[in-house]
Length: 533
Image (cartoon, rainbow, N blue to C red; front, side, top):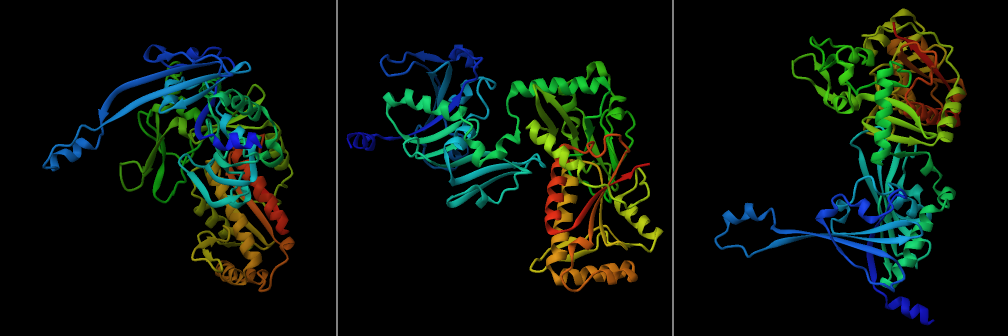
C-alpha cells in the first residue's frame, strides 16, 4: 500500500529516448561536434551511470517580428527565443540510452542510434487492443504519408490498413502495464509519459532495453518483420555501394528503370535522359541506354541523383515531369542475409522468409492459356487493346468504358478485353510497381462489383454488346457463379527467362495478394506475359 502511495506522489514525466548502437562505446563518439557542447557531471549514487551534454545558442528574436514591426505604431518588447539543446546518456548493461531535451537529437551523429528502437519497444509493450494512432507511408509512393488517429483506443484492425502496401512508421498506444508508462509512441525514438523520479531512471532504462530486445511483438504484430523502410545511414551507404557495383558490372537482371509516377501517354511523346546530346523520346527506360550517354568512370551516387529523366509533352517543349535517374531505379539485392528493395527513391528491407514465400506464391499462379499477339515497344496500351479487339469476334473491347458501381459516384473500368471464354483481361505495360499494383487492385474491385452488384452487371453487359453483341449473353442478370469466369492479368514486357520473378518485388507482393482475394471469391485467376517486340 505504501508503494502505491509513493507511486501516486510521483510526477508524470514526458521523456524521449534513443538507443545508441552497440559499436559506439562512448557518448562523445556519438556527438556530431563535441567541441560545440559543454559537459556537466552527473551525481553519483543515483543508481545509474550517466553523462550530460548541453549546447546553448545565442537567443534570437522570433522570425515573425521583422514582418510585424513595420506595421505597428509602438515598439515591440525585447522578445527572444532561447535555443537550448541537451542530451543525457545513461549506461544500461553494455549499451547507452540517450534522453534528448529540446533539439538534443541534432547534437547526435545521424548513424549512432538504432532506427527501430522506439517502434519495437511500443510493439513489445503496448496493449494490442489499446492503440491510439498510426503513421504510415505507402511503399508505392514517395510522398504519401498518412496519420490515422482514432477517437478511442482500438486494435490495429480498426485503422483499416493494407499491410501489404502500408508501412507503419509511428505507433502510439497504452501499455499493458500502466506502471511501465501511461502512453508510449515510437518510431526511431521512443516517447513515453510515465510516473518516475530521478532515482527510477536506471531501472526504467533496464525496462526499455528489455522491451527492445523482446520478440513478444511477433504474436500480435507479425507483419513488422516482413517489410520496413530502411533509415539507417550506414546500411543505406552499403546498399548504395552495391547498387553502383551492379550498374558498372552490366549485370542488370535485378535492376531496371521505371518512372516513379503514372504516365498518361496521350499527353506525352516519351521519355529521355538529360545526358543525351540529342534527346530521343522512348516509352521504356533502359539502363544500357543511360550508360551509353555517360562516362562510367564518373558514375556516382551523386550523379544518379543529379541526372534527370524527362517526360516530353506532345504540345510543348517544356517537360510534363522530370525525375532524377536515381528515383527511377528499381533494384533488389541481399546484404548480410537480408533482402532489400529500392523503389521510388527509397530502400526497403524485406524479411527473406517472407520474400521467399511471396515468390513461392507467385509460382503457384497459373499461366493463362489465352494467346495474345506481341505489342510494339512504342505502342500505347489502348492502341494495343483496340488492335486485339479488331482481330477477332472473340474479344469485346472494354478499355476506357467505365461502369458505375452501385452506391458509388465513381466509375471503374470493368477490364480492357472481355473474351468468349468469360475472361476479364486487364492489360498493362510493365513500368513501375505502383502502375502494376493499380492493375491488380482494379481486377479485384471489378470482380467484386461484378459478383455483388446487379446494376453493375447490367452496365457491363451493355458495354460488351457495344463491342461484340454476341458476347452479351455471357453476362448473367442474376448473381453469377464466379468459377465460370477468369480474371487474366496481362503484362506487356520483354521476354525474360526468370518471368514472372522479373516483376518488381512489390508487384509480386500485390499480385499474390490480389490472387488470394479473387480465389476466395471463387474466380479463376491467371497471369499472361504479352511479349514486347
